[in-house]
Image (cartoon, rainbow, N blue to C red; front, top):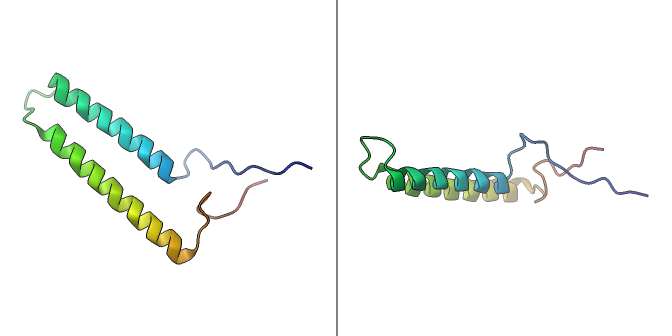
Length: 83
Protein backbone atom coordinates (compact mmCIF):
# COMPACT_ATOMS: atom_id res chain seq x y z
CA UNK A 1 0.00 0.00 0.00
CA UNK A 2 1.36 3.41 -0.94
CA UNK A 3 1.32 6.35 1.38
CA UNK A 4 0.13 9.65 -0.14
CA UNK A 5 2.77 12.34 -0.03
CA UNK A 6 2.03 15.88 1.08
CA UNK A 7 2.93 18.28 -1.70
CA UNK A 8 1.73 21.85 -1.24
CA UNK A 9 0.29 23.73 -4.18
CA UNK A 10 2.58 26.17 -5.94
CA UNK A 11 0.76 29.17 -4.43
CA UNK A 12 0.78 27.78 -0.88
CA UNK A 13 2.88 30.09 1.29
CA UNK A 14 5.51 28.24 3.30
CA UNK A 15 8.52 29.50 5.28
CA UNK A 16 11.01 27.97 2.85
CA UNK A 17 9.43 29.84 -0.07
CA UNK A 18 9.63 33.06 1.95
CA UNK A 19 13.36 32.48 2.42
CA UNK A 20 13.81 31.86 -1.33
CA UNK A 21 11.99 35.10 -2.16
CA UNK A 22 14.11 36.91 0.40
CA UNK A 23 17.26 35.47 -1.18
CA UNK A 24 16.16 36.65 -4.64
CA UNK A 25 15.47 40.15 -3.27
CA UNK A 26 18.87 40.24 -1.59
CA UNK A 27 20.65 39.20 -4.81
CA UNK A 28 18.84 41.86 -6.83
CA UNK A 29 19.62 44.52 -4.25
CA UNK A 30 23.26 43.47 -4.12
CA UNK A 31 23.46 43.73 -7.91
CA UNK A 32 21.87 47.17 -7.89
CA UNK A 33 24.30 48.32 -5.20
CA UNK A 34 27.30 46.80 -6.97
CA UNK A 35 26.41 48.07 -10.45
CA UNK A 36 24.75 51.33 -9.41
CA UNK A 37 21.67 50.70 -11.57
CA UNK A 38 19.49 53.66 -10.65
CA UNK A 39 21.06 57.02 -11.41
CA UNK A 40 19.88 58.39 -8.03
CA UNK A 41 21.56 55.50 -6.18
CA UNK A 42 22.88 56.67 -2.80
CA UNK A 43 23.02 53.51 -0.73
CA UNK A 44 19.28 52.90 -0.65
CA UNK A 45 19.82 49.27 -1.70
CA UNK A 46 21.59 48.52 1.57
CA UNK A 47 18.79 50.15 3.56
CA UNK A 48 16.14 48.18 1.67
CA UNK A 49 18.13 44.95 2.13
CA UNK A 50 18.36 45.41 5.90
CA UNK A 51 14.67 46.35 6.09
CA UNK A 52 13.61 43.32 4.03
CA UNK A 53 15.56 40.97 6.30
CA UNK A 54 13.98 42.59 9.36
CA UNK A 55 10.48 42.26 7.92
CA UNK A 56 11.12 38.64 6.95
CA UNK A 57 12.31 37.87 10.48
CA UNK A 58 9.18 39.44 11.96
CA UNK A 59 6.94 37.52 9.54
CA UNK A 60 8.66 34.24 10.43
CA UNK A 61 8.31 34.95 14.15
CA UNK A 62 4.63 35.80 13.73
CA UNK A 63 4.17 32.66 11.60
CA UNK A 64 5.75 30.56 14.35
CA UNK A 65 3.63 32.12 17.12
CA UNK A 66 0.39 31.62 15.17
CA UNK A 67 1.30 28.01 14.38
CA UNK A 68 1.91 27.39 18.08
CA UNK A 69 -1.36 29.06 19.04
CA UNK A 70 -3.43 27.06 16.55
CA UNK A 71 -1.31 23.91 16.88
CA UNK A 72 -0.70 23.64 13.15
CA UNK A 73 1.55 20.86 11.97
CA UNK A 74 4.89 21.89 10.57
CA UNK A 75 4.55 20.17 7.18
CA UNK A 76 1.54 22.19 6.01
CA UNK A 77 -0.69 24.94 7.30
CA UNK A 78 -3.83 22.81 7.32
CA UNK A 79 -2.12 19.60 8.45
CA UNK A 80 -3.86 17.54 5.79
CA UNK A 81 -2.69 15.79 2.67
CA UNK A 82 -4.72 15.80 -0.50
CA UNK A 83 -5.23 12.37 -2.04
